[in-house]
Image 1 (cartoon, rainbow, N blue to C red):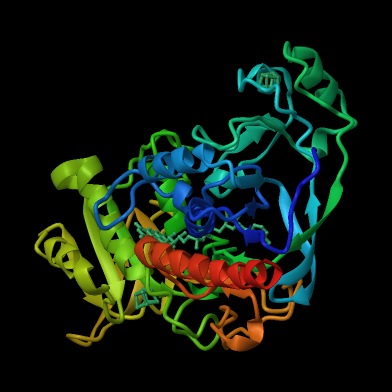
Image 2: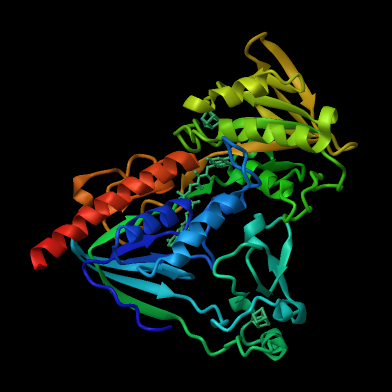
Amino acid sequence: MTDVIATNETILVVGGGISGMTAAIEAAECGKQVILVEKNPSLGGRVSQLYKYFPKLCFPTCGMEINLRRLKANRNLRVITLAEVVGVSGGAGNYGVQVKVSPRYVNESCTACGECAAAVESEFDDEFNYSLNKRKGAYLPFAMAYPQRYVLDPRIIGTPDAERAKAACKYDAVDLDMQEQVLELKVGAIIWATGWKPYDAAKIQPYGYDRYANVITSVEFERMMDPFGPTGGKLLRPSDGKEAKDVAFIQCAGSRDRNHLKHCSRICCMASLKQSTYLREQWGDEGKASIYYIDIRAIDRIEDFYQNVQADPNVRFIKSKVAGIIEDKATGNPVLEGVDTEGYHRYSNPHELVVLAIGMEPSVPRDAFPMEVVVDEHGFIEADAANGGIFAAGCSSDALDVNRAVQSATASALRAIQVVNRVAGAEG
Ligand SMILES: Cc1cc2nc3c(=O)[nH]c(=O)nc-3n(C[C@H](O)[C@H](O)[C@H](O)COP(=O)(O)OP(=O)(O)OC[C@H]3O[C@@H](n4cnc5c(N)ncnc54)[C@H](O)[C@@H]3O)c2cc1C
Ligand code: SF4
Ligand code: SF4
């Protein structure tokens, strides 16, 4: 890696999802020097793992392409992938930051031809598809990955597979001697955009995510619908590969529950409404959705979307907190049990597939930040003067949709610019 030039007029953005990319681009387009660090091998975050996103139901590739174009065109912006901040010292206008950069084992000469992947034999769970399938030990994380550069999984280093990858590469792009590096950066302000992660569904014992193959999470459902995903875009049951046309959605799975996440994750109602439209799209009149909910929280202008879904006779709303799921051994169908709180009827409803509208929690746990930062009771970063020149963007500050995440990112870019402008003013 070449030297990274940074001064206390530089803004560091941590996390390369939609929020981090937006904050970095906005600040760089205002003429500021920006370094964007992302722990994964490529940018895009969790939006790139969605099939489509509301409100317009566009493909994430389209928003991603616009951002990448702006990002590539800006010489003020430097992207470092496979990088994590491990230490922060100092204060606003004068931070010292240590960034650990893991080796990719593939250099800039990579043309993304894929020969290395064809040559290696080992396979690992595919993180991009939430482990629903396997990928090779040499891989491109996803079709639109930026940078368009393959990665060697560190688990193949020192094995014959690593040598196979090297031998297969005609461009001398595989570098097995790459080492971990720790960069020491001086920056004036930090935008923290590390986003969210899905709550661990296995912890919600009554729903049997770890026992029943046909109980999946909402994030997995997004990957299954994607033509580039693990099932090639076909909604197939994990247990037997049968088409899943009658699908139940369980709202507040892990959210608004004192045993799990206390907060409302705010997005999962909209996510299930959106996902119910995927069933129509895939199966036409045969696609049926049943949404089990406590109350539907659809956010402002997205109310229209809710009304359209409500008008669909193939979408059923059942006001109930599902008590538990059992499995019908003969059919493999999960059977939902509970009480409908509108009619006070007990139900025992079989469905072909169950989707848990899983809660969103901060991706960095409250005790894992490499710096002092004020967080709320759920672990999201607060806007607090005590944070100095550190500003949260997007889902590191709350469970937000893309629209709100982008607004929050733009606001944090502005605050960070104000900090480095003060430095420039004091020095000038
Ligand atoms: C099932 C589901 C469906 C959804 N569908 C929609 C939708 O249709 N429309 C919509 O508007 N919203 C939707 N959302 C919400 C959407 O996913 C978020 O708004 C969006 O992901 C927020 O982006 P972000 O950049 O803040 O966080 P993220 O997407 O989580 O990005 C954070 C980035 O930071 C990186 N990172 C994490 N930790 C570190 C670290 N320590 N160091 C460096 N980098 C790090 C991550 O690898 C990631 O790239 C959905 C959410 C769910 C749960
Ligand atoms: S590392 Fe080499 S073989 Fe692998 S994709 Fe890149 S150029 Fe092709
Ligand atoms: S957004 Fe809906 S499903 Fe998600 S926690 Fe809030 S009420 Fe429950």
